[in-house]
Amino acid sequence: MEIKYYTTGTILEFVSSGFFSKLKNIPISKHRALSYAYNPRAAASDKILFVAFENDEVAGYLGALPEKIFYQGEWKRISWLSCFWIDPKYRGKNISKQLFDFAMKEWDNTAMITNMKPGTLKIYERTGYFHAPFTRVGIRGYLRFNLAEILPPRGGIFVRIKPVLQLFDFILNLANSIRLVFYPGYKLDSDLRYEYVEEISPETEKLINNCNQSYPIQRGKQELEWINRYPWVLEQEEDVDSRRYYFSSVSKRFFCQNVEFRNETGTVTAFLMLSIRNNHLTVPYAFFNKGMESALVKFLFNSMLDFQLNMLTVFHPELSEEIRKTKSPFLYKKKILRPYFIPKTLDLPEPAFQDGDGDCVFT
Image (cartoon, rainbow, N blue to C red; front, side, top):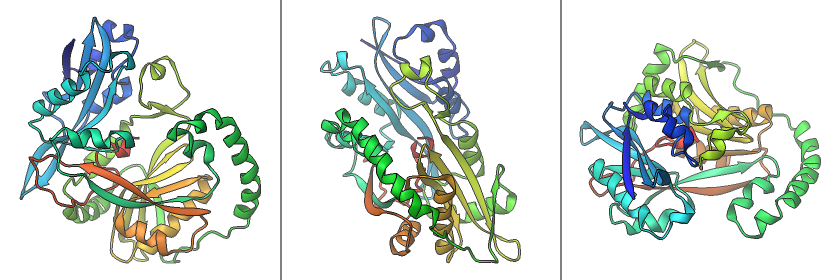
């Protein structure tokens, strides 16, 4: 077994090679590689993909997303680990530990992790690299019945009866659709207007920069525009390459939208990045002046009705609290948790993260 790494500067050459085209399982999608290559926070020499090969076959891989964090008064280079996969036929050969140790060493033990599969929590705790996981508490609201999407990932019988769950969803949502047709929606303040924008204006950039002082990651105009231009998931049907890649690379519906809010004087008071994947709405980034919470939550509820979405998930503390106490069209609301692993090389007790920090915004 041999572990090879690819850098920001070499990743595009790798995915364009004949060797890559012949691999049964690919360790990265071509559009994800493009995103890595244009990451504004990455250097050309940053190691972003670690691949374990066995006789020119991919036995496993681990990605690293280069990042900067404002730490103890200065900017420090770190990464977020992502897309950790081992081919089932090579499991039990200690490949996962070798890959993980190799990646942590190359990043000087400064890599962070979030958005991991629930079953891997204990595995990362046992590595010894991290503090006890820090957990953010968010909220998830269900506008429509969605059993066929929620239950099968738990495994067991739910996978086998997915067609039955789809039938239940269909029948229940017929009745629910009548309720939603007559749902009045939410009237926003007459002095507040919003606009979907492709580019972030200088005034909005100033608001983002001011709000970012509360966060260690501080993704700004350059990073947010990079996220929009270079997605990891494309809105299309499955193709040959997407079936060769273990992680999601295509979806029937996936897009991000930037929304700018202005008051009666034309001053920018809020900016949201919305992410819609199939029937699920998330808010990767939210920057706003104090007192805007109620208006923004009403806007999110209206967006769900307009886009005919099933679920909303928010971790932003002010927005999630407003959702908890506001009358909503949801059938059901529940608490949801997101753990973060912070390396022992960093002292970050209860850090403030935006919902999209790490690789969350891309998926």
